[in-house]
Length: 148
Image 1: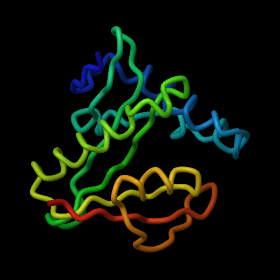
Image 2 (image 1 turned 120 degrees about the vertical axis):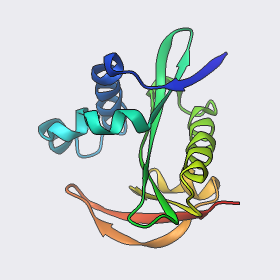
Image 3 (image 1 turned 60 degrees about the vertical axis):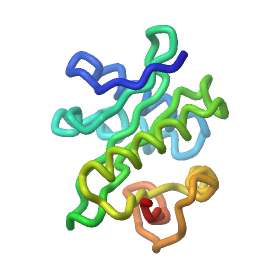
Image 4 (image 1 turned 90 degrees about the horizontal axis):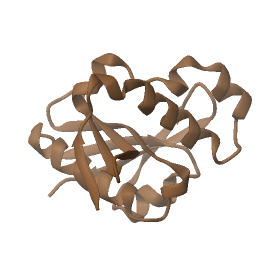
């Protein structure tokens, strides 16, 4: 059974390691990711906004939802699932939790910046194209979902 809980301070290192492992699993931009400290970090300031998915006491994913620049928007900052748990519904469960948390913040939309590999997942979750952005590594898309 998957348990969803708030992140704790002691989770920070494990979340950073999961973030990097998940990012590297595709085999894209490996050297760039390994050279970027933020690719393996969850900022301490984000921890109150992080929700963890656990299975059998093991962290298998997490999502971060931050208030947007205006009250009507929230930002899905990070969503990472352990590669061995991909395609098992964990990401969808975390998106649903992100939407719930965004609505609790008063947001009417949830935005995410995603690479091309993640884009189909977000589009299947109801997000729509809202623009392009340049990240530190590669071009990406901004996607937006209206919250009911």
